[in-house]
Structures are given as C-alpha cells and as structure tokens.
Length: 280
Ligand code: NAP
Image (cartoon, rainbow, N blue to C red; front, side):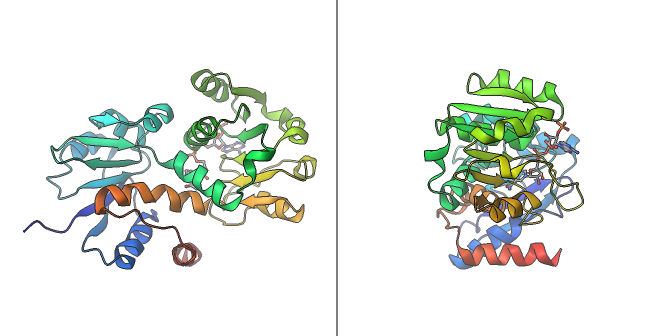
C-alpha cells in the first residue's frame, strides 16, 4: 500500500510561510490523508533537494524566497508562466519521476482580481503597475495574458522597469517614478507590487483622488490586509482588491497536482488565514 502523499514549502527562512495554514485547511476540509510540511533549505542546497524530492518523501512542493529562480533552473520542464515570469513557485513529480515547475502567482493575482472586481476589464484601457520586482513580473504576465493592451510600469529604480519592458514587450511602457501621478487620470487599474505600505515600510505616496471613479485599485501586499492605498481607494468609492486573495488562489493548482482535488478558496479559509496573520 502506498503511503499518503506529502508536499512541503521550501524556503530559507521558511518559518514565516502561510502555505501550511492554507494547505492544512484544505487537507482537513476535504478529508485527505496527506501532509504539508515546511522545509528550510539553504540556497546552496536547493538544486540537490529538488532533484531528490521523492527521496525526501514528497510528491511536490511550493518554492518560496530565495529559491524561485533556482527552481526554474532545476526543474525538468517549466510551463509558459514560469518561463515568462522567470521563476517557479510550484513543483510536482509525474509518475516517471520528472519534475515539473509552474508559477501560479499570475493565476492567483488574476483570479482574485476577477473575483473581487469582476468588471475590471471594462474600464481597463490603461493599467498602471507600480514596482518591478519578482511579483511585478507575475502581474505583468497575468495582465498581458488577459489582453490588457497598455501597461504603464513605474519603479523607483528605472533600469529594472526598463528591463521588464524589454522582456514583456510592447504592451509595457516605462513611466518615470516621479511622474507616476500623471498617469492616474487615464488609469483603469492601478496595481501596487512594491513593498511600500507593508507593515514596517513607509506608505506608498500616490494621488488616489486623481484616479477616475471607475478605477480598480489592487494592492498585492497582505500584511496589513488593508494598506493605506486600499483605504484611500475605498474612501474615494473605488473598488479595492487586497493581496490575500492572490496568496490563497495561487495555492490551488499545487494542491490539485499533489492531492488530486481542485480546492476552493472560501470565506472560511480566508478567515482562518486572517486569524493567523492577526496573531503575528
Ligand atoms: P522585490 O522583488 O524585492 O521588489 C520590491 C519592489 O518594491 C521593487 O520594485 C522596489 O523598487 C520597490 N520598493 C521597495 N522599497 C521602495 C521604496 N522605499 N520606494 C519605492 N519603491 C520601493 O519584492 P517582490 O517579491 O516583488 O514583492 C513585493 C511585495 O509583494 C511584497 O510586499 C510582497 O510581500 C508582496 N507579494 C505578495 C504576494 C501575494 O500573494 N499577495 C506574492 C508575492 C509578493 P526598487 O526596484 O527600486 O528597489
């Protein structure tokens, strides 16, 4: 008899990861005999750990910081999203032992956006994306795949935005960080992917009142859940999309690969994760 499937999240450090709460909730909710664990793996050991994943007893894993780029190099096959984003956050083994890698952050962001702002596409001729780090790559991939034709990308370090614009091609145009407010009157969707507004970081300085009344504002930060940006958007009567839904939705494809059920993101799951965030 085969043993129950086990998956894990691999990071360095890994203690802060919320993934065990999410997958633990689904395992118990669907009555699955399986396990989801944390694995602290040093950067110099990640390639070997992934190569030996089945010997460690795992059918797959989430990969978090700082291993996502190394995981892309380590998998036998990566999907389109992982290649475009340049990073892998979910891996699974097939029956032959081949290691597959995906990046589910774009899926998570877009699924959450669609769920919380179903009308976002109608008002989105122009999207403005703030930040050009790892998460911005996922957001750009998701927006371009959804057919957004014009994305103004702005980042404190202009060179990073220019690199992304070159990689992602014509829908992406670089806007200087100092000129970010000038893009707002025509902006249908504003996405913050910087760490500004996160607990312990300065707030994002942006002129929310300059946005049209139809604009949707998304912040991918989820600590705090209600960032100053989202609070200002709501105060102005705009649709505001928080970052927790992205975190929850990005977890679903991995769970399905490892445990065979496509899990649902529900209000109850969200409440459980919020409780752990509030507990610190
Ligand atoms: P990252 O690669 O380190 O990028 C950080 C970004 O923030 C860069 O664009 C950086 O600009 C900008 N930034 C940092 N401090 C700044 C400042 N003082 N002024 C202006 N810009 C500043 O990080 P990441 O992985 O993309 O993550 C970014 C945020 O997204 C984090 O808060 C993370 O928790 C969140 N996130 C959420 C999810 C989710 O599922 N909801 C998933 C991934 C990430 P420079 O390039 O100029 O340094």
